[in-house]
Length: 177
Image (cartoon, rainbow, N blue to C red):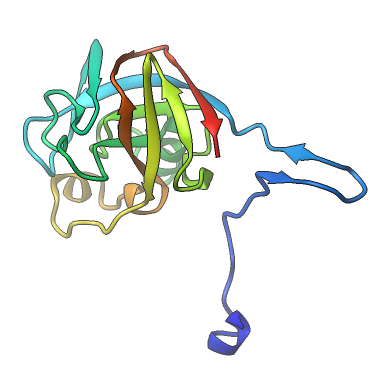
């Protein structure tokens, strides 16, 4: 059906997460565990976030002290350092955690391949993926600084299901797809 719309289209960034049956039997991809590299907040929206030592995550709120927190589906934003490294390779070597306004910078998980509805632990909190990517704000501080933004395609958003704390070095474990 896609070919009828555009014969030159591409389907990219796809990965098998789990399958059953067939010659090789049951398979589960190893995209189930990562680590927190930084916890970042800002007092206003649309600006680069700054690191904090320990973040407090609250149900129906998100990361305490962050401008994006509140009773909505995008309480906490996450971006993988592997995504940030792609931008560094494109000629932006001075990027650092928080430059894309992410609350949590991670390592070891291909975040944008984790399905919406996935539940995971991070530190002592439990969260659920609610959105993958977002519409980029034209003229925001992030895009002005780096000239491009990876959050619209590779950042994810989550809501807090169980209160807890998160800090640099905490494990992130997917517990339910």
